[in-house]
Length: 398
Image (tube, rainbow, N blue to C red; front, side, top):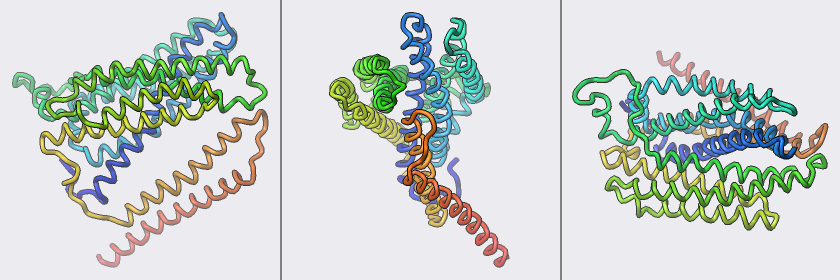
């Protein structure tokens, strides 16, 4: 089922890009789930303290944006999976085809329900508005479970025929979720608690220079963030250790150093969230959290390599037809357009958010915006030039 044309670049390159891009994707997944859960809880507590109401409104906005970001950032790792693990991913989706369709509709309905909660969540909002949010969060969690199942089913090819034709009877309905590793799923989902905690600590550091963010409110958010981050990381160790010791399948993964490095990183991140934030270093816990997610992305890939390697599948023997022009164009797009244009938007949003009222861009930000436009124009020109050269070459040959 591999592409007979092979890959245009080295498979290890795509493997590294898969790990990198999944890290960004899962970061927004976890922050979104954590923010949505805390927004609902804060909404129910808003009558006891006005800070809860303000936090609920803020986290409702975070969730709204987070869903958009996790969808956009989920495209890249999905494409890299389809490039180097296309037989496994395709089969896993076909075996549970109905759930692949349900995933899309659940995401759409869930996003619409969250928008309804977003518009309803204001001062004096009625309590029944929270059911929109609860419904949305339930569908988001369902989608997370479906993605987990697809990922897990894809690394168990020895069981595909049992699922496709149980007891010799072919089942083409695609209505079953065949493989769920609850310890793995619960561990990753549990990271949404420390993720929102780390986000709240960064939130305090970001807005502490704004005069319209009172000290009492920021202290309230800081205490909440420290609690979620420190205790959340510690509690997430429980399902992780269960996953670690039920993950072997005779492959010796329980002794792999990457898994234990991830456990150590979780402990260090919990410590950093409590001690460093208490010392006023609010951004360092975020760095520790990113380290945890990077190690998690690497650990997932190590597990996949071991499972598929046990049945003779490795990306290293994928046929390669090097296409340096397209590979170079891809890398330049990834770094140039993504770095310059993405960097401009991130810088603009970061700077403008720290100013109350109208923001006037500094010269450096304005220069970065000019560079972003220039890079986009250059990229479009190069894109069409590539197409024109290839078209002329084939026209002259024929």
